[in-house]
Length: 189
View 1 (cartoon, rainbow, N blue to C red):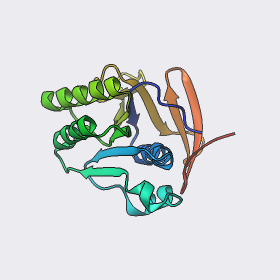
View 2: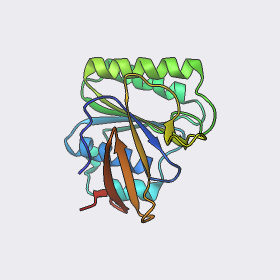
View 3: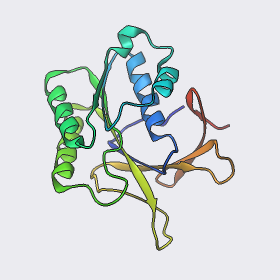
C-alpha cells in the first residue's frame, strides 16, 4: 500500500532506487480508476518495467497515460502539462520524472515553470509528483533534495542498508519499508 498523496510531492531519490517505478505505480492506481495521468520525462521509462507495472491495465486505461519524453528540455514538457491541465478536466495525476539534472541547480526558468505547474495542480486539485535525484549532505546532516519546490512535501527514497531489495521511503519523521519487485513496491510486513 502506497501512502496517499494529499499535497504536492517532491520525491527525492537516491540513484537507482526506483523513483520512476514508484511514480508508475501511482500512475497505475490512477489509470485503473479510469482517470488520466500526465507523465513528463527525459526518456521514455524502461519498456520492461512499464509492461510489468501496467500489465493488468486494459488498453483503454493505458490510453489515458499522456507521456511526453522531452530530452534535456524538461521545461517544454512542464509547459505542455500546464496546457493539458487547462483543457482536460479528468487529469488526476501529473508526474515530472527527473525534473532536475543530477548535479547543480535547476535553472530559474525551469523553477518558475515547475512552480506554475504546482500552483495549477493545487488549484485544480490534481496530485503532482516531481521526482529528482537526492544527494547526501557533505556535512553529514543526511539526505538533501535538489531545488526548492514550495509548497511540496519532500519524500526521500533510498536503499536500506540491511537488504539491497528493500527501500526506505521517508515522509517527515515516518519511515516506511518496502520491497521492490517486478510488480513495484510492496509494503514490508
